[in-house]
Length: 291
Image 1 (cartoon, rainbow, N blue to C red):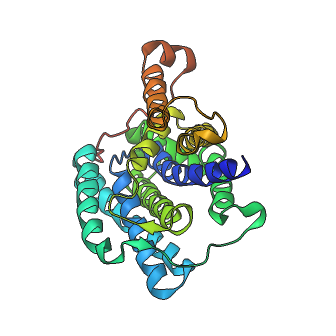
Image 2 (image 1 turned 45 degrees about the vertical axis):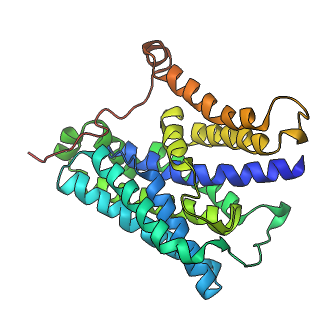
């Protein structure tokens, strides 16, 4: 049971890091549906770098760097060129899927490095994720820069008139979001499951994207949603630890994704928006041209 909880915390960390970066980006008005692609690239480069150098730190830095670069590239297409953000994000995902398969193929297999040991047997990324959630909440809701971020995502024209450089804010947020996505991928390949294979995420990036909408753009709700999904995922891998002999393992595997679809369907209804005030940024996904 303790192992189930430990693995659940570690799995939730991957989702939290990627989704938290996307939450900040979306708060500024930029949508990146190619989140999984950034995670794939970050995880692959982190794995290759760590295996080649024997250094976890260099691996993490590689994940951060490639994630930030891809986030910046998405910003260029979405902010400077004012292209369709969905098309740009999907392009990044397709590119990442193909390139990581090619680049990572020679490194297929286990990382071959001793696991990082921390108190309570948890990965250090778990503690980092909780700290980042608290910091993100304070930034978005309790600081002047957070107000500028929210203004850029709600009404960029009014924000520009008030002296906020919307393009700069959006570039910073989408780059930061890319860095966290790269870190999320690095967390997967260096800690959670240190074995590289093509498409190793299997849809976790899209789950992270869904969690942003589920969270109503609130970091604490995001943490709770990621923890719930991760617990269901780990339970689906080893249901006999809690509910032995009940249903097939393959049915358990569908439970986290079915639950995600049901929740997203509920929060998309007009009833939910009216009753709970869904906090979707008004200008999310819309290009902005300074007048």
